View 1 (spheres, helix red, strand yellow):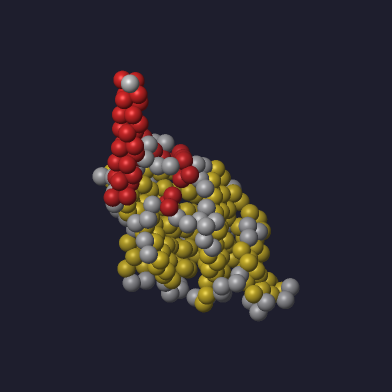
View 2 (cartoon, rainbow, N blue to C red):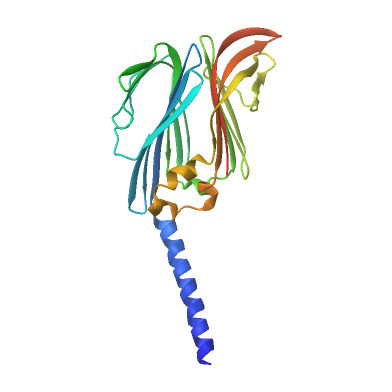
Length: 282
């Protein structure tokens, strides 16, 4: 009888702890703010930057990262130090990051795009912009086109209703194409061509079929900028965060590319530019 009571108490205690954990999970406020910006110059050298801030479970984290493709070599730096986040005012984004030794300016060439869905707010401040970036006092880009967006979430990422996402942008002197596709639980297929929505574009890793009247964006000279479980590397440096995140998120797979792009219509090249695109699965 005594052993039975002990087992019963232990079982009830386990249920109580699990309920407390669940209640804490449900009550805990979650807010993620993440900036993404990039640029590619005329020769194909590329820059991808991140500036994120997370508030959750009384924890506060800042993260900034910089990925550079230059002369066929790739470098990757990041910091968890407190950092000035980018600022968008009027038609210009500025980002001065002391930890990354970076100073950058993005000047708008196209109007912003925004989308809000409940606990998820996405703002593409600059679908296309002129880019000027200095890293460690050296001018990294003398001429190039870039992109800036900001994502704000109060929904925990592991509760997102999908498990695969494709995103990308193609920029040329004539065209601006931004796309996002996701699947698994829910489905989304959004493509913006020169500021207008194209809902039935066919999105793939090697190109995008826009429509019969607009043609396709073909990818060539593809270079892998990053591949693997990059979030696991970041979270692994923050033990107090890692213990609260489910494996679904910490083990997500990401592959990001820089590709030369061409818009082809009726077998003729209408425009050429550069593409940055990615696929994420968890």
